[in-house]
Image 1: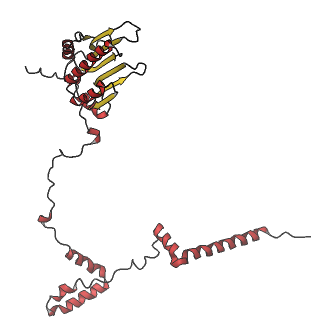
Image 2: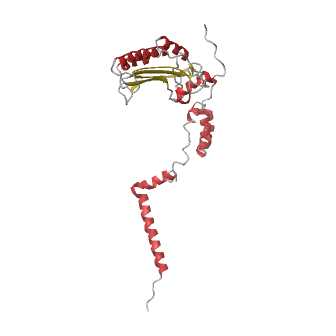
Image 3: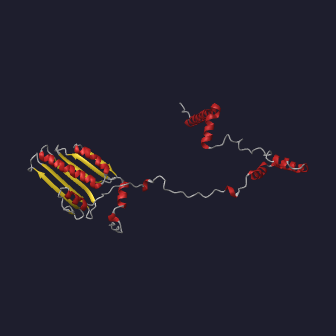
Length: 305
């Protein structure tokens, strides 16, 4: 008949041995390499295990009092001995008066002067308040339509458009050749804006086949483009005249205004020109809103005659 060994005692012995061996390994790891790991734990968790000597009181500050007592007469030696004894007995009480004497008294001349007020004109702009220069039309719709009529394009008067009551326009169209004829030439121009005369955009569509009618329409087109770029007074856009004269695609953008001339992909001799205001940046939109006369509560004074 066999008797099973007690399991509780064997488990207890196993855990005790494991704890002892683990403790030995842990202590060895902490004390190895001149207690480098133990010092790292001390710095990490602020245990202050190695700062016992640093926390001891500093030696008595007798040297600070020595220069002051050296100038006194010889009759005060007993008092000096008493002071030195008190300093060695309680250094903290003597160090405080020494520090008070060493601190210079604040004079009225050392007070900081009030900061001078400076101008903010040259400060860098704040992104949230930054604005932008934007262009506007230098001619009204009524005047531009009248100038186009004088140049030989009978666009008519500035009148309400069929698109809506808030849109005014003038336009002109001419076609040389029958409908459906691939060699027919045509010219179409439209000027649109607000009822008060503020311009919005100008569009021209022209078909210039390689024949006499196409060349005549081409001359009319070039004259109209030169007139428009002259009337708007946007002189930098006049650099596009060379590319337009060579029938090359060109796009110019400046200060919220855009000029684009491009060829239609369905017809090699059909072209479009668009000129108008195109404000995309938030700064340009904000500036345009500020100078929009339609939003002003007070009417602007009439121009001087």
